[in-house]
Image (tube, rainbow, N blue to C red):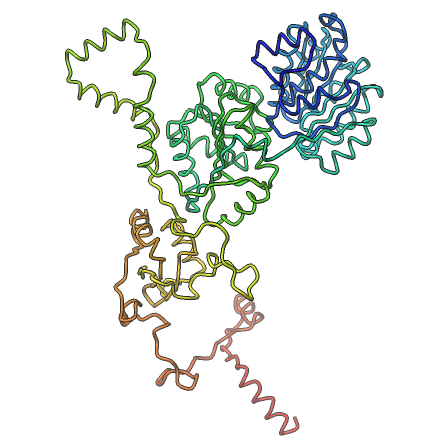
Length: 618
């Protein structure tokens, strides 16, 4: 369905951008009364900016062919982050360009004096972040007396970031007869309260549909060992080779580390986090838009509302905290009808958390291991053979070079040189295994009588695994071996989870343990590459019942049972513990005469003494 009849200047602008028909949110907003307040719930990437831009046109243009000379602003748009505000500024500039509209941005991190001069020169629309707009209002630089409409974009995010007080100040400073439009991905109680306080008879428009908004996004969950999330990100990037991709990390430190790691490996990557200056962030985004960079590493806040061209891959290096964050992150791709892929990097220790998250977001997801190095190389080969460089028109100078090469080298040598040249330009993939191979997919078994029992999360070491393989580690009780630190060590070294570890038997000088047969080969290869050569892990020989062979340092589990529940025959009695009181120790340290150690009586001895005293009447 085409756009309804619009102002000729806006129609011309939309045609220049190849806008043939409105999105659902644009259609719903345009169908509403142009004088009525709106409370709109719509998913990210649904075209909200153009929707409220077209809705503002009636108040700004009326029947005039173009806007009058700029003076005091007529419309105000508030956005939560600098990047989103700058993006809205660009969208409204082209939308109102044919109508002679002048748009000014006021965001934190930019030169406030330059913004002051732009406001003083006059404009039609002001776009800014809450803190900077409040500062201009308090200093008298922003004249709000002529405002006809105020738009709060991503209102839920602004409240989450703590801008409630700033928003209330801005809305209170604007004319009471203004039109107020609130756009939000969700409508929590805080947004409803804000609408009730600052809107009049608002019309609620709900076009948020998780299924429709993410129908163009393919979700994938990639299992990995707990310490190999970064390597999994590398292989996912290499497997898809997207024109533009974004990698989300939970913290600024995570962004710094991931960006440095990807850059070191040869990826053209930029970072985007709150600790960077606005100039650095703007340069990074521009590098993505013009193709100089292909990977953006960002935090959630820094990437809120971004619309990057050709962004077809989103990677969650750190799992989102909640459903809303997952949908907002994923919404960076699959926008405006374009297809996209969203990949969650899931350490095997956090699989349950990832499943709960995906279930709450109601998205269908495909589980798999990380792309292997061989799979990445196969993709590289397919991309090379299908490269348009072989079918495109050649320049004359290229033809001369090709003839010179053919005269000097054989076709095989030229082809090998080309393949080697292209391979050296690509970051090397990592050797990874699937730590979840062999696990059943779908709903997990629940044993009767044990609510929530999960066989894959049963504490290892309690029972022998069926068909397991025994391994030997050259660390035992003599070196304080304990399952509390042995299990994490084995998981890290062998790239497995604790679900694949069975019985653990600790002897004096070694430890025997079971590994699930489906993971034995992976475990063997991984432990062979351990950096610490003083720690040796090797397969153990099998005994008569599938247990490891016994030696003179037999594990505790193999020792003979004590007669009648007591100590083994010939076992020496346990020595009584010697102790020195705290007062005696302090006195000794202060130079007092040393005291003899006293023998602390056991429970039975103390009971015997009390009984003897009772009999004597003392």
